[in-house]
Image (cartoon, rainbow, N blue to C red; front, side):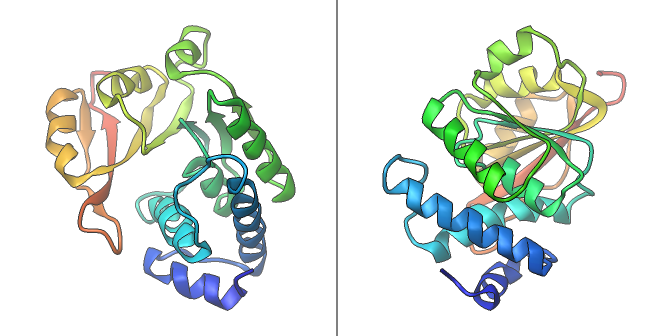
Length: 212
């Protein structure tokens, strides 16, 4: 297990303030992720150091852009990044993790349990199905990282956002212009560069006035 000091140093480029309790939860989450990853494919990243920077750090970076509170929906949550990781540093968030794969849902529930993260709801549906039965206009933040099909995802997510809500996408820099062009109903912020990467950014949009 990495020491708390090593964890803090590795996450320093992502500009996140971490308490001793936060560090303990990160270590528990990371240890569980690496153990489960030997049996089921949660991530292609195998080393604890790279898991910290690529998964935890890139998730935590969102907190640099705006306060994290209210209800958050994480689409295609996988191993919990960014949704469950953001709950770890923002305990007041009410988090819904959308993950259709049963083995990954089992991991998410166990990670939330051992880290004492509540309320966290894990839903075994695809976004299209989730949109059909409610929760419209009820989320303050919607996140999607390493998820395909953005041409369908963005319009569906728009129907789930509250009027002042934000859609947050972890994407390649080369995708930004296409996303903005195809989704002019959003006001898009300047992309936030991810430390250590020339290609990946966080793109945040809000529904343009008069469109919601």
